[in-house]
Image (cartoon, rainbow, N blue to C red; front, side, top):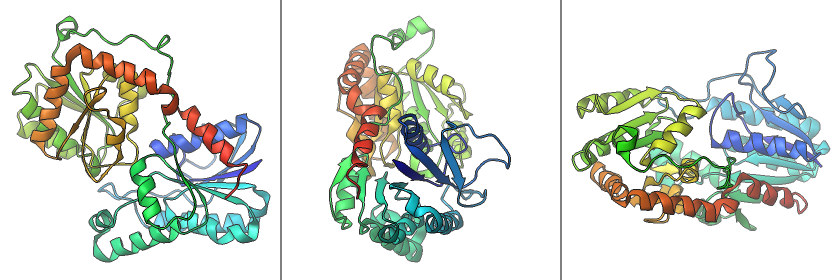
Length: 393
C-alpha cells in the first residue's frame, strides 16, 4: 500500500511519545514492504543525513521553526504553516496515497487532509492522543483563544475518519465531541523487552545493600502540566516519615528553574537532585534503582513512563485528575498508587504507601507487567493499525 504518515515532528529531532509512535509506525510499514512517505516540518539542518530507515521517504511541508514558547506552550504559527504545507502536498500528490495517517493535533493538518479526502480518495486514519476539555482549553489559551481551540477540535472530531485513542478517557471525550463511527483504544506503546526471561533482574530490595536511601524518581519534560515542583514539595513531606528518602528529577524544560528553587526552599540540597537532561541509559539505570516512579502530572494522554517503570519492577505514583489518563495504567496497590488530590500532602502520602509496600509491591509490579505485556506492547498496537488500513475510513 502507499501510505502517507503526517506529523509535524520527527524523532529524534524532537522527543516525545507522538514522535516515537510515528517513527515506529513508518519504519514498521516500510519493513513490511509498504511505500511510506513521512510528511513533517524540518527540524534538522539542511543537507543533514536523517537518522531514519532509508526506506521511509521524508518530505518537508514547512521550514524549520521553534515549536514552543519560552513557557513550554505550543506556538500558533508552526501548526498553521504545517497545515498549509500539508494542503499543498496533498493537492499535488494526494491521489497517489491509499491511506493518509495523521495525528489529530496539530489540527490544521488534519483539516487539510479531510478537505481533500473526498476528491483524492484516500482513507483517513487519525490518532487522538488527547481530547482536551473546554475548561482546559480556556486555562491553556485564555477566553477567546480557548474557545477557538475548542471549536477547531470539535470540527476535527466531525471529520469522517478511522479514529484511534490511547485511553478510555480520551475515547469517551472524542465520542462526546460528536465523532461518527467507532473509536479503537490502543493500549500498547512500549517498545522495550516484554520477555521476563531476558529482562535484567530488579535491583537489590534492601536499600542498605545499595548503600543509600530509597529513591523517588521523576523523568520527563519539565513543563507546567508535569508539576515537577509539586513533586519536590511532596518528597520533602514524605522524607519526614521515610528515613533517608532521596529524590532525583531527570529532564529539562521551562520549569527546571522552578524545580531547582523548590529544592533550595525545602532545604533538600543534600538529598534531591535535578541534573537536567539524561540519556536513555541513565534513565533506565535510575528507573531500576528507584523505589518508585513519580508522575505528578495533571495532564497525560497515556503515561508511558508508568509502563516503562513497571517493566523494571518499579511501582509508580500518579495523581488523580480529570485530564490525566495515566491513572488507567495503575492498579491500586498492585503496580503503584494514585494520589487522590494534586497537592503535596496527598502525593507524599502516596509515596509513603509505596515505601510501606516494600519488596512485595515490587514483586507484584513485575507480575502486573508480565500479565499485561502483550497488550502494552507497541507491536500489538501496530498490528491493530495495520489491519485497519484494509478497511479504509
